[in-house]
Length: 228
Length: 395
View 1 (spheres, chains in turn red, orange):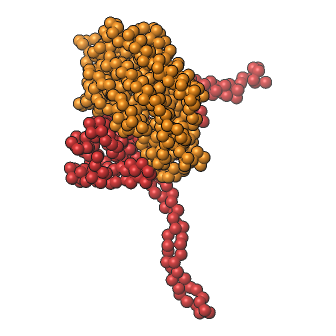
View 2 (tube, rainbow over the protein chains, first blue to last red; view 1 turned 120 degrees about the horizontal axis):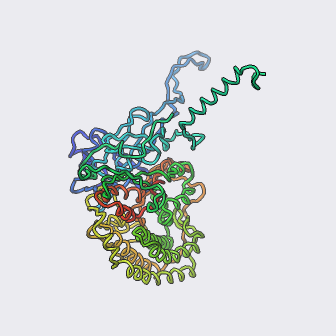
View 3 (tube, rainbow over the protein chains, first blue to last red; view 1 turned 60 degrees about the vertical axis):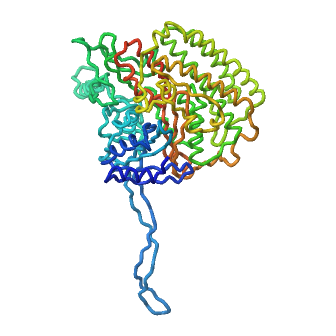
């Protein structure tokens, strides 16, 4: 099989303008991956499937990963002029100090695709795509039109992570029920106190009954038990 | 107040057709469609699974699977606990094949950390995985025939053989189904000479069981009439839809991960990969029968000589287990298809991301394609031939 660099070169030669980036994997598995841009993802996927050398006809696994906003504290070297007394004389001295500084690395949602080839019997080639952020720009092109295997798995990611796959033919929740609001696999997800709670039409009946009870207690006519 | 919900999945479905999409079928004439929710408590669904079926008379016009009745977010639970603590939970995914689930997870972690597995442990793993494959295929066929209407009898024949294998599992691991046996870099307890003798005895009886099973079933007129030519899955669609396991090989695609990846020590054993011709329910049944025979062959080879030595990598850590940051995808040929585990470690004691690639769920992608145009009674049969376990589908 081609190395990851050769695959990247093949993609860049076949699809001009495609921005492909190698994501190294430091673990002993050494399964490095390629990050694709949204605009050319479909073309790249089609190329990988139909290219005679690669023939990645089998999409095995599709996964979502949540990368929340990260607050990073790092030490930055700052040079500033300080007035110091050296040998009894006041002097202006330049001094380099390490200062802790905080910055926030914006988070994103990521989808990971594991490709194999059934005809050539090689793999895996790993593709990744990232959304712009975790809140409002969570679209990503769907690869279901290329590999049908992504159909249920992209629905699952939409359900559990909230990535919206544009171009998916049937994007509904897969595991949670349709009325569910949140995305449980996100790392900042908070479980509800009561899993069984469901608003029912009887809630409004009970509220009316409670209001009615309160009203009758306040202005109970004289002569009744409550009016004494 | 809640918004009104519809029980049917069809209303929200967008109609899009492509070369790999199921065809959109139209009813004959002006017939009124009957929408049936098969499940979640239909006896043929092996658990809690629903198919929303639209029927024109008895003919299936549309079919949408509905999942999630057994969803407990296994992946989230595993991300909140240590690497080792998820091992017993993998037993509960596909509760028929807990040992292969263990192996897939152990393999992914071993890829992540670069641990070696001793020779003896690899032998034990192959033995247990092939025993698991035989008992899974036997009961899968048993359930398939039961859904055809042969109430119980073939299933009891299958369970008779399965029980002997489960006895072996119990005497080795302490549990019949929830084995929790593999560890990262080896296995939990060693096999004894007495266990090997018992295993040899069970293996010696297995060919007789498969012969008996096949004499009862393979030439049976009712089975052939019901199974041949229905639920046909084209090989191009099977590959594109990520179908794996006996279902894929029933469609004639030669892809067995034991042969492709040579994980463990599978490159040392002689076995063939049975393939189907037509991709119908009968071919899937036949592939399972033949795979059982090949597994018996592997067991005979593996039991001939088991090397001595340790069963755990002496360098592997059990306590304070923190893999370096990185990621790994490990996969094995589980009885139902490709079972994969994808792990991301950030250097902590818990996996940052833990993903199960469930063969049962992904094999159901093509359920609608196989069922369209058939009778509703055949849907039960086609669904049975997929061989799923809901614990793995919904996770």
